[in-house]
Image 1 (cartoon, helix red, strand yellow):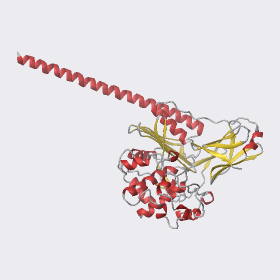
Image 2 (cartoon, rainbow, N blue to C red):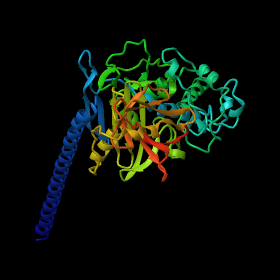
Image 3 (cartoon, rainbow, N blue to C red):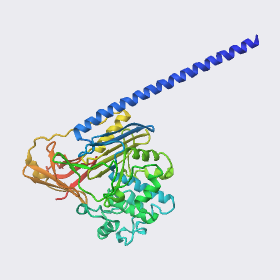
Image 4 (tube, rainbow, N blue to C red):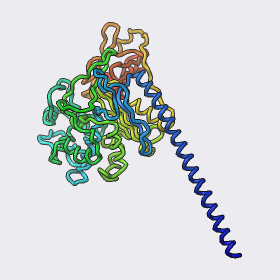
Length: 461
């Protein structure tokens, strides 16, 4: 009798275990189906948005969206080369402009972990013939764009090869824009100088150091420093818009952007890079925390760090003639968005933020197709003048008959097209400008939005 009871207990226990196993399996299947449906909804919404981007902004390029360590979308749109009708793909290589800065910053931090420098070191420790006014500057000031060093205008030297020595020669007699550490003012010259420090401290060319210590360990086989003479498989051709027509972008000798903007990459390689930043494969957690700590201007080391879309958003843009890129990391949601375009007027930041919002299933701003409206051109005379974004970055506004034109440092003159009496946009770039008047009706400043970021520009003339 006792044996029968014992056997019955074992029987019912086994049935209970089997029921639990079946319930668990059903839960796993249900979760898998719902996750798959959720991902499919995202993919469909992304596809609809990207078709809108093609229609409204002539988007051409490649995007990648990932969540929770899984790629949801990785797709090319438009042409890598319009003349040969070669389509963009996930393996297409784009110049990434200022996305280069995050690699430069990481290289500096790797050298710090190796004990070869410290970000609090004096800049003059590493520069020959360091200007007297730079004695108080540190590597940290360069990394965070708080050095006060002016950005060099290379407009007249786009074809010639330039070295850091040339840059130093151009800067040696220029005073700092402000006291170090007081103000954030984005200047690519900061990161060009960091590239020089990397070479001097490591004893290796900049591109060799990055390849050996970052690209090779992460198996980023489609990323490197660009070279105008190099034959590069799957290279995207860069384009610009002129008068609404697609044209080949202006030539840029790639020695000019150097460690501030000289790399090329693919969305797949940049995703490998993004995922590595969740690990300590390259640098320690302590160093990563320092990199992603926002300072003035919400800038860390090579990244902007802000609270947007209801979470912490880490991002950076990259612009170079013919190319516009943007990367977003939402580390608390494990979401990544990468947008690479070979059309420099592409609103890459707007596209990337919308794709991030779609992935989070929250409301997003649709791309706006801008339309010219008829306005009273008598107001144009009050807009004529110079607007200072920074001491060496001026927006000059002029009038030719019934048309208004803008000319910014480093770019050619473009027509400012009216959306309203005070708001204008540019077809050739992702740029808008609003003229602001005081109560007396006098224009005091403008608000310029360039490549996704807004800056106030005081009218100085």
